[in-house]
Image 1 (cartoon, rainbow, N blue to C red):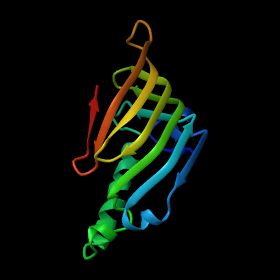
Image 2 (image 1 turned 180 degrees about the vertical axis):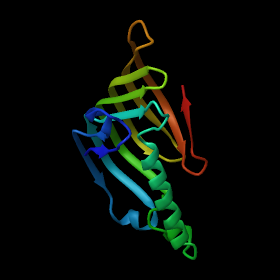
Image 3 (image 1 turned 90 degrees about the horizontal axis):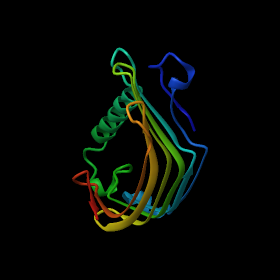
Image 4 (image 1 turned 120 degrees about the vertical axis):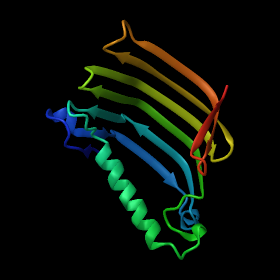
Length: 172
């Protein structure tokens, strides 16, 4: 599922994201009142290619601006409807199981001649529920053109996400 952007000159710079495979199981009825309940979500081969070109333009900025405009339009259209009934307004998010395997995030800053790659990303979490603590495991390798050698990271923690304040906390 590639997302294309036009800030780069080379072909591989045009792909913002890509997934080899993804599977999701969602409960339908809770969606109608803004409750997202995902039984399982598995992603394999996720690639995210973030680039800042020599002029300082980033390849994800256009996507964020377009999304902000869509959200603003949806909010303006639904002003007289109570927030609990607005489709697209997330009241609660529950994920029973999330798995990301073989993920990679590449950040390239052509202005600073800097490149950072987070590769071999493996993420597992269970019982994700906004406002409640849930277990999370993540492992990846960090590489950069400014590092002498790669850094291997393995992190196990409980985590909590609050949608209202848009904050998350790690509980080590």
